[in-house]
Structure formats: C-alpha cells, structure tokens
Image 1 (spheres, rainbow, N blue to C red):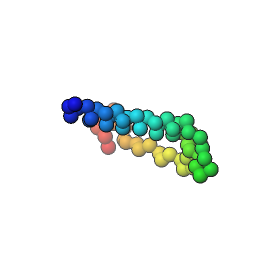
Image 2 (cartoon, rainbow, N blue to C red):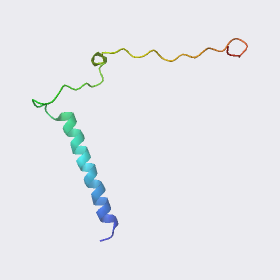
Image 3 (cartoon, one colour):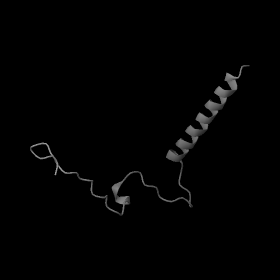
Image 4 (tube, rainbow, N blue to C red):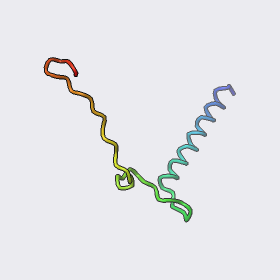
Length: 65
C-alpha cells in the first residue's frame, strides 16, 4: 500500500459525509425544535433593500462634474 491510498480514502470519506449532510438538510424532516427556514423568498426580508449606489453620468463632452 502506498501513501496515496489512505489519502484518497480520506478524501472519499469526507465527500461521502458531506453529501450525506447536504442531502439530510434538503430532505430531512423537521423536528419540534427546528425553526422554519427561508429558501430565498422575498417575503422573509422585513427590511427593504438599500438603494443602489449612483454615480454621475458623463456629460456630452465626456467630462464629469
């Protein structure tokens, strides 16, 4: 056995654990202690988005004031 095999086994094992946790988070049932999660809906955000930053437009001569 070479040193690459244990390293590869460790990487594969970490990938499997990560995939398991990800899938459990996606498909896992809610329990009594869990809170509702937001999946990107705009209704969850109680504060409005800040106005976008504006910059002065160049004049017809190409110079800004």
